[in-house]
Length: 272
Image (cartoon, rainbow, N blue to C red; front, side):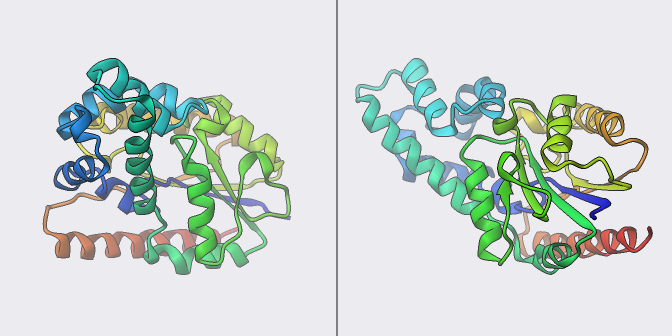
C-alpha cells in the first residue's frame, strides 16, 4: 500500500514553458498571432489588467474555462465590432497556443518515471488552473508514458492523479482542495508528504498571482492546510526559478535546480 505522497505544482514547476509563454516579448507576439490584439488586447499590460487578473478567481475555481472568460472580457471591456463567434475563435487560438506551451519539461521525466514505478508512492499534480488544463496535463504525462487521470476519476491503484482547482471548486490554499484529494484517493495511510511548488513565485510580473506577498501568504496557507489534512509529515521543497533574461544561463539554472530537487526527493523517499 502506498504510504508516501509526492505533490507537484504544474505551471512554473513541472511546466516552466507555461510561464515562459507569458513573458512580455512572447506574450506580445501571441496576442498578435491569435488576433486578440486586433480586438483590443494590444499589450501584455492590458492582458493582465483587463483579462486575467479580474477573472482569475472565477477561472481557477469553476468550469467557466479560459477561452470563455477571455471572450466575455473582450466583449464587455473592449466591445469590438465583431461577433462573439469571431472573438471566440481568437480566444480559442490563444488558449490552444498556451496549452501547447504547457507541457512537462523533459528534465523531470526520469524522476517522474521512477515515481510511477514505485508502488509506495502516489504522485499528485496539484494546480490552481483553468478548466482546460486538466486534459492538457493528462495528455502531456501520457506522451512520456505516464498514465494519469483527473482526481475525480482516479482510483487507489493509480499512481498519478491531476488535481485542478477548477475541477475541485477551491484553490490550493484552502482546506477543501486537500480534503477532496485525500478523500478521492483514500490517503488515510500516508506517512510522508513531499510538496514541490513555487507558490506562484515563477509567474510573470504582470500576473497578480505571482505578487511576492501573495506568494508567501499562499505558501504559509498551503502548508497549514496540508498539516491539518495529513498531520505533521510535510516536507516542502520550494522550486524558485530566478530568470536573468539570458536563455542559455536560465536553461542551465533550470537544469541545475531540477537535478537538485530530484535528488532531494529521492533522498526523502528512501527514508521510511
